[in-house]
Length: 313
Length: 307
Image (cartoon, rainbow over all chains, first blue to last red; front, side, top):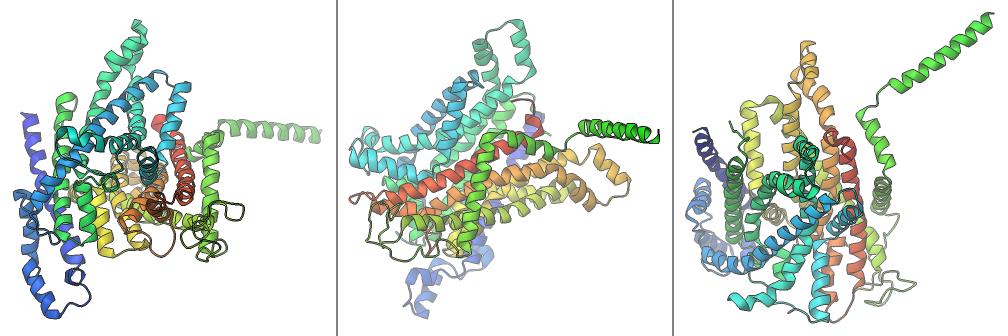
């Protein structure tokens, strides 16, 4: 019963946050930026042209109505049409999500899996040479800018060695695979450093708990303690960490998608940015925020389910 | 006779002094400083940060690398004795450009922190200390901000503010105060009911005095750790903004130099701008990473005795 009330309250809290997100987007795009028509029409636009365009884009309407439009779009997911391509934005997003997810999903799960295994090994040999080397490699790898990785791997592995296609994308299940291997590989390399560090800290945090000492005193083996006791307890932060990252998979990787010409959401963001396509940027901000809000709610629910100690007021 | 007594007394005094010195416990920062000095990697990192800061200051004063914009040789000449890291498309010396880029990178880190830290600390402290409606409002505000993926927020802000360094500072500053605010809020909430705060209250200390004079000094370590991590995130983000074309204009930065490589590598094989800027950035980001970790180990009381 208590849980139910908590869930309902937590669910209702979505509304002010969503309204706030819309308010910030509205504030940035509809108030601060002022009049986008000179950007769209160029320097030689006449005043009449600008006026008609404003009318056409609905920029002459009362401000509260413009705000209401954004809020409405968050619920109906109908974002209107792009200024640049005149397409339905919701359709553009659907078209873009498939290539994005085809690259980010496998990359994300592989990198999480690999990082978790490395973290377990490192935690097992904590304080030793393996631990030191892996930690040093992680921190060094994290210190190289992502753009440098992409440029280097694309140039060296794809262009010079010809191991992968340099760029491009094919729709349909088996066809896209050759095109996503290299970007996915770079994604894994980029995320393995922070992931291993996080998982290692989580596991080590558990290792210092009293129950581990008890298990050791009982005479259980190191492997037994690590896999049967510690790992289970460290699953909570690990699950949270994984779930909260899922919405970002929709957003894709702007850099990777652009360099490898994957026609996903990341490419959409950049082309919208270059053509001052405000509706597309606004709707992407709304939809990714929506995903983020829903998934953070989901992690909270998971938390209470997985850990009965978490009693929420 | 008197002399002997005096001698004895002074010897006693000395002994007392000694025991006094031994028994006097170290402050958090004294202890942290001593721990840092023992950590060779942390000392090296601090030296690197200092070195880069000096270069950045000298460059911003126009003492070094002021001539980055002059043509010194042929376009795209490879690294040689006269041009350590070769030249770029306009025949400008890449090494000089990298030195000038230090100024941009350090200023991005500095100004981002200068925006994020006061906002995060003040909002977090008020929220944690006063609670109630103010707290609800501030929590709502940062939940909202953190619900928008920061890359979308950064893009929107830079688009609106126009291109340039100031837009970069503001965009990165407004997105990076949230985590600090959340940490400070939690920590202040923990501290506000502790005995020393109640003692301050009993002695008639006003709320503001309790908060700023008593509680905040006890949470400063969070700010220091956070700033060190924030700094390198800002430096790394500058590259992405440069790629998006909304970063620094009309002066070289490591980001624009790395971004230039996308036109230089294929066909021309010009790698020196990419490698040079990447290494320059790698060293300082690594230094901040190591320093941040060492600071956390040294300053966070929860971690003591674990390593």
